[in-house]
Length: 587
Image (cartoon, rainbow, N blue to C red):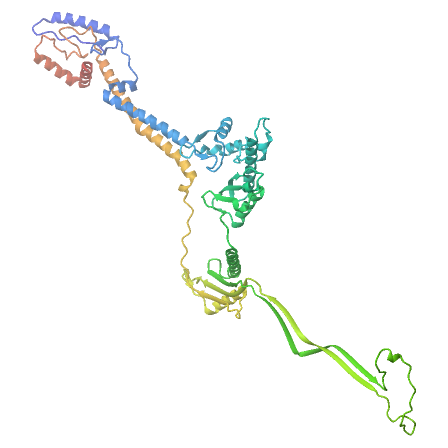
């Protein structure tokens, strides 16, 4: 590219103009070897260092746009880091429940030694570990020998202490050991999560009037949804009372975590008997109801009927003693017969000494019969006796009626309509017939042991049941924890893509486009090949063409304007680049 010398002024000769043009052309050829460029002051440098297009585009922005672009890029980077951290975030779960009485300091030491990441919830104070390290953390705690049972028992007495230990300290240590052993025993029950026992043992006194009974308080922390039965509370009371000398069971109080006094179970004999009778009646009804369900479930189905049993149980205690005699039934038990006969005169007289006198002279009878026998014979005695004992039929009976005798039984069974499929394939309800209900009634009567003489009543009716509530379906997959775990990574990736292709990439492309425009402008300006030495005081060369020469400062304004118009018509792009350079240099 060659610079053409400026046109001569009006009125001058051609020779000087040619000489001047040759000298200017020679100096322009010497400057062609170097690339001309406009410096920051609007001048021309022989060396041009092109910056990076991105930096050049950023420099071309105004101060306000550069500030906004930097803020936007910083915000984009911060959001990108937040998205990455969010996607890489892990779930933390409690290492132990709030009811576990671990020593937090010991647990933290174990986790630190095992190199397990943990956090402490500021609200609840629970120790949180990563979900993936939960099992390892619990195993580490177990290996360290940490336990929720912080109670101490008789092992507290293993340390004998020094010789200067007072009797008070020994007594307090023994009482604490006894409390720990009793608490461990109570905690062995299934319903009890933890327990604490406080003993108040009075000091012994040599005076009988100063002897006082000890007392105890038992605090139990029960598992959720469980409760201690009356017998279990009595067992705890008796356990504590019998473990401490001179302690009565009435001096033991049992309290749960809700502040309820469980040991206030004293009932008089009548209340206890009533409660026992009520429980017995409920057991009888439940037993009969299970029998009905056992036989009807096979016939109707589990959801096709409802049965209720009401039992009237007689708890009257009756004792009866009875002795009966039957006069029609007589049996000879014993018999005694006596037959006595006496002939002649029996010995008589007054007993005594006179009886022992020898008899006197015998006198002949005065009268005898023909045979010589006396007319008056001697006296004879004859007696007969009989004694008979008869036994009457006697019945002796002792009757004691059974306590809890079933006095009357009432059974009610409601049967749902049958479900059948009609010709159209639809399910419709069909009521039971009377014959079928009678068959079901017979089954129920035989199952419960129906007795008409006792006044039992069994009713089986057919009634349409209300439609059951809709079964809650399983939650959809998008409500599962694993789905949101995956979606967290997916959403994080989408956010990063939007951030890169929607914010960062357009900004970079904008800067690159501006840099390319500036490079094109520089290339167009270099195409002018303007040399600093070629600019004289009176003429300026802007083109290699000889047809368009700018007049010098001494020329008229019309000629300068006409020359500029011709230059603009020839190459408007280069003129615009030059004007832009001048404007930027002025700024």
